[in-house]
Image (cartoon, rainbow, N blue to C red; front, side):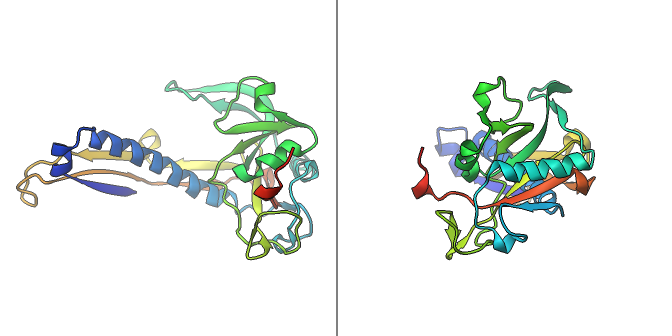
Length: 246
C-alpha cells in the first residue's frame, strides 16, 4: 500500500492533470511492489544449480547452456510439465496457447551472457512473444528479463574473470526456472485484490478549506510454492560492462 497527498494549490496552479498522473504512477508502483513480493517467495525454492561450485559463496562463473541443461534435467526427472498457455494481455478473460516450454526469469544484466550461450535464439526469430520482457530461448526454455529478479550483491566468490562484483566478490544472479503448477497466487478479493482510491480536495471537519487531496492504493495477497520440485534456481555470475564484446 502507499499514498500520496496533493494540495489544492497544485491543482489550482498546475496546468497538467496531477491527480491522473499520480494515479498512473502509483498504479505502476503497485505492480512492481506486488511482483517483488511474489518473486521473494518464488526465489526461496530449495532446488539449486550453480554455474560452478556447490554453494552460492563459490559462484564466480557466468551463465552457459550447461546451467540450463542441469536445471531442465532436474525438472524433467520430477515429471514437471512445461507451460503451454498464458493469460491474454488484453481486457478479455481467458488464456491463449503457446509452444510448450519452461520459463526462466532473469535480470537484464544476464542478457549478454544468454546471447553468447550455445543454442540461443532471440525472440524476434521465433515469432510473436507471449511474455512482456521476453528476450529469447534456448531449446525448451524461454527467458524473461526483469529488474525485479535482483542479484545477491557480493554473494559469490572472488577471482572471477571479468564479472560484476561488489567489494571484490562476484555478484550472484538467480535464474528461476519454472514449470507448470510450480507456484500459485492468492489474491484476496479476486480481481479486486488491488483497491485504488482517488480523493479530490473537499471541505470536511478535518479539512474545512479543502486543501488536501489523496491518491492511494492497497492490496492483500500472497504467493505460495505449490511444488518445490517444479522449480529450480540457477545461480550464476554476469559479465562486467567493460568486457561486453561481440
